[in-house]
Image (cartoon, one colour):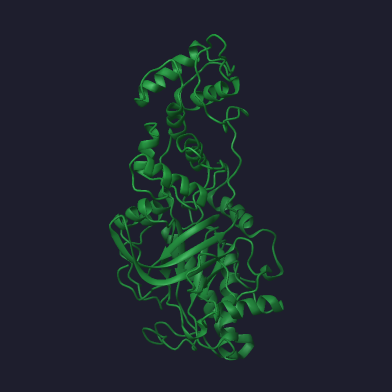
Length: 475
């Protein structure tokens, strides 16, 4: 259907006006992560004459958002911990936008946004999107918000290739980096500049001054060891950046990642305003729905919805006990009797998993021997499934579920997801779950079916109640 022009509808500043809502040092590791995220340097990543890279942030927090494909939300005011916990357990979101700097933001007072808040969210699995909202294009029309001496617009003076605008971009980058480091947001993380949309991207003065500003923002953010991101309307800020990229303009340095505001209610990263080859793969996110109320876990927040596709979300390969196969069709295992012989592949997998989780010290023989049965029965007593000479499907479920119990939803990845996927293959008849460590729509559907099967509300999130059912071997 015809696209509604976003150039006549400036997207909000991410709902900024809403009131409700090893051997490597940390620094050295962050450089490696940054290079891994960005890949080989491109022509637009040429070195600058700015000061050397500053990797002074000492936090042990993970890079954010890092590699992530899934859903996020944003609002101006960082939510309370109680709200964040409720939404972690019940909402589809695993990423959250937070305003950390910029004199033009409406929420310059952030009572909840502290280093502890940041480290807590990251430890719980949230991906953070740190945003700065400073000088805006004079074409936007509603800035300065607080007065020209507090939050001036981007300079339109064209002298020396918009040197004044470039100086502003550099200053905002330094401010953003200082704010990020004070909060414990480590190098290698993406810092986003919020450039609000305006009605006519063809206005040369506003276009060129904005490009000069964003060029210096990107150069400086990279130089300080972070990843450069820019948020803007598809029909203005994103349009001019994509045009400059396509034209291979030597005077413009485009950001590493883009956050496109296009309220078409489609959860992807596409828009007709951008060419298909820009910032792909893994360098885009889209704000696809504007401000509205959502309630999860009894908590209502006014948010924008976002879909992220950043980095490479394929989890690392996983090995067990030096190469023992644990991704199998799980069946009941019994002691040898008459013509029955337990499958040695299954028994070896059981021995391996018991070694990893239950203290089994015997050899991985594939024989369901006395030592294996004794450890298995000790596990049955521990989990309350009832001691038996047999190792049943419910016992397999408890074994796979044993371990950490993080909240998992679309966007989650890694070994915890694999554990759930293995358990679901056993627990949900007909589930077509692939054990790949990626919490995708198919996994979410199987989780929803499992939850309904064991008497929980049927939605596709693994949280504390889901883990409890799995740990008990419920089917």
